[in-house]
Length: 629
Image (cartoon, rainbow, N blue to C red):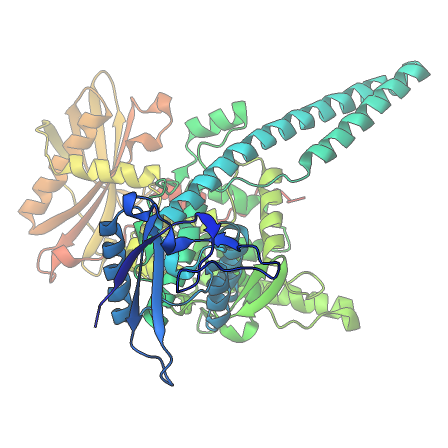
């Protein structure tokens, strides 16, 4: 039964009295002085604070359990708190526990036996660097959202101090570099005293830089704050579910600065020009176009790990998955490889562990990818013969020349160096996952296929995180939208359109119309299965430019489809494939049509593939190779 007792007490000191009201004396016969608490004569005049206590059900063995709290300015506050604590106790919370939050966090992380190694490392960093310094002194039962707000306010204050520290270090770095340049300039021709002076200035500046770097710590970003809060939320949820250690998950009530996920950007010509001029990347996550991708593959053709870079670009695996891939999980005959393990790095130490359940997957290999793996295996066999007994039998697919496995961080650093040597705009190794997803979408693959290829748990993660919009995709979308609105451009049929049987594959035909300006405003537009094949038909028209030629071609093909019971499924305008100077005199459009009697035209998975120019740029050239240093 809930029957709390309320009373006032204070911290006043005075002569102590026993239960009978007589003074309590010390050994010398003098009155003892101490806290008079509930006997202070001023209590009836609004002096002191309100306190309460109430009894809980006896513990095992009949031990009494009494809850005491105090320090309330008003009686109503004491009553409200007493009811809150009693309700929490009835719900199962241990309201008598004096455990500190620091002890609870350490107990929680020790009890989490099933955490992945990297996840545990991240939790421990958050506990040691943030939760213990700010929350360890608070009793678990007293933790509230205000304590968490104070912690994040303190982190932001520390950030301001770290920013100032970093600015000072940047200035010291500049001073050191300037002093070094001055010393270099005086070497070899200046007087001995001047050389000594500049050398001493450099040594002093270098020592100042080393001293200034002491205690330099990175900024705690908003994204890191959210991860800290996730760790805290996980701990509180565990405490609530397991032992009702908290009344609420206070971490869920915290308001933190918003985090904006960086949007992948494509290296367009304008962005490349800006990067060359200023050295600045437009964003933290950048993606190559198919043309730049082809240039990189051409550049690294003779690199020992060319086949690995090819795999990263077209399959999009994680670096830890490739570092751990064994030959036993690769089939060169059936053309597949299975991702079933990964190597993770914790403080540069390597550990092998299974990836998340959704990341265990089997990837199909193209013929080119299969040939690449076979070629790399042959290179490994040759190195095994050359190294003889010194060869390391790691069993891994991707290794150094001596057979030793690759460190994931080494893979990243090697890729970064190759990109620098190639002169191409910079991308990170992890950005190749964005590139693989984008190329797959550009080739017409469904987002579900891309999700399974990358090993994500949901389509939303794939769509939000790893897909950029290449200019080719935007152009195809824009031209497809324009194509549904027919324009009435007059034309004359010079030779009727005839689609040969060889052009049909599974009741689908793909062909091009190529327009060329003749004299004045007269255009001739011919249909071809390939840009360099025989004409399938031709029209002429009087038009103002390539757009009129393309619109006339669309109307011509629509009329042909309507007359021959065919469906015009897709139109793609490739006018901008031509250089700027030629766009006034040439036009190129690609058409996809289907036989109407084919079942379910709306459900076709059309083999759109890459546009011709993009496809050629994405393929590995066989001439004009440049060797990677």
